[in-house]
Image 1 (cartoon, one colour):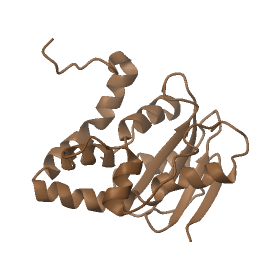
Image 2 (cartoon, rainbow, N blue to C red; image 1 turned 45 degrees about the vertical axis):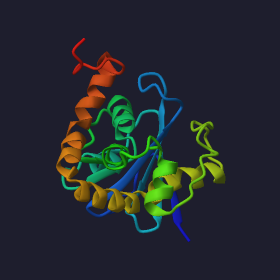
Image 3 (cartoon, rainbow, N blue to C red; image 1 turned 30 degrees about the horizontal axis):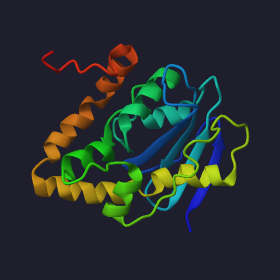
Image 4 (tube, helix red, strand yellow; image 1 turned 90 degrees about the horizontal axis):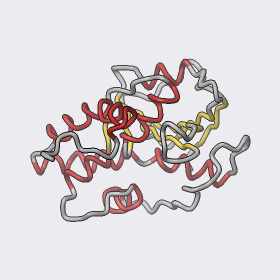
Length: 204
C-alpha cells in the first residue's frame, strides 16, 4: 500500500529523497504566467509520496532547496511545463532534470502515444486513472480522490525511467536524451519569455 503525506506550505526539514526524486505539479490551468501553481508532488520511488500544498507567497525554503540541489536529479514527465511553472511562481531554476516524456519520444519512435498514462501502461505495466486531471487544485481542502491522483503521477516515475533508460541505451540515444534534459531549463525560459509557440531553430 502506498503511503501519501500532505504538507501545508513546505516540506519538513531533514526529509531525504535520495539521488533521484520524482516531481510533478498541479496548477489552476496550463498558462504559467496566468494560472497559479498550487501543489508539488514528490516521491523517492519507494512507494511513498509527499504532497506540498503551496501558499500563494511561495515561501517554501526546504522545497526550493531540494528542487535546486545540484546533487539530486529531478525526474518529471513533461518537465518543460513544471520547470516553467516553478520558475515563474517560485522564482527557482530546477536542475538537473530527467524527463520521461522526452525519453519516450526518443526511445518509443514506433508510437505517437507519449502521455504518462500510455507510457506507464507499456513501460511499467501500470494502469493510471486521469479522472481528476481537471479539477480545482486551488481548493483549501483537497479531496481524497485528488490526493490519490496527484500522488500517482510521481509514485511510478522511477520504474518508468528505468524502462525508458534501458531502451535509450539499446537504441544508442541516451547521450542525446541527456543533452535534451540539460536544455530544458532554457526551453522553459524561452516559453516564459514569449517563444512558447515559435521554433527559433526553424529555417523560416
